[in-house]
Length: 304
Image 1: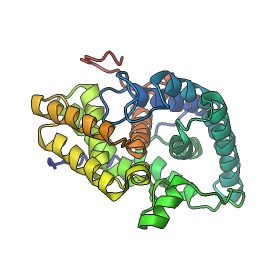
Image 2: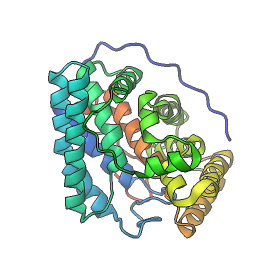
Image 3: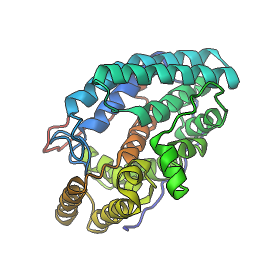
């Protein structure tokens, strides 16, 4: 894997976030993640990737549907202190959001993992006020570690993977304060920008670094340990070849995409964490007021 120089953790910020903008921003980053092209094995502007039941229009529609639910999480978190009541109110809103997602998509899971990850970050941003990513992620972890007594005791893909392989997924990532976002996604995104990469290639670089290190339960559930190895090794190969935006890196990226689609492998957990990365990046950049994220430049796929 190519070397990563970690940008030092930011110092506490004095700016504060308007909670009224958080639902709009959450919706925007989900759309931005879906539109980012070319992503290996994932839905983007070229097509459905490894998913026969998904499309870019469906992903956009799902994000639009979820926006008000994220805003309700922000509103509730702005009114309640950290504790059991807040955790259980957020859990109830999340379950309502999931039901609404399934109604809007005809039963297709478009953003279940994102409801959990982005929902926690939205709530933490509303609770804490300060926009420093590591503070928000740490508070999100505090919320995630509180037990929800009303959470249904149902089998999920994550629980299946945990039983099969002893590997925890989205819940453990959140309870740990989103290390793949704070320690990998954000530093890579910033370093790529500083090195002159386009916004598109910077985001793809962040995604690939996450893919190369994450035990993605979406991959493990569908493709097992062999599939997880293909994802990690393939992402490392793209980065070692120069990364997105280079001739050899783009060639490796295209090969990885072909490999994942041929094997029906989708790194959906990594995509959720990229969306979380974009969310925290936008908050720190002060872009929450407009509900936007960095504009994409020099994008041959037209993802502006």
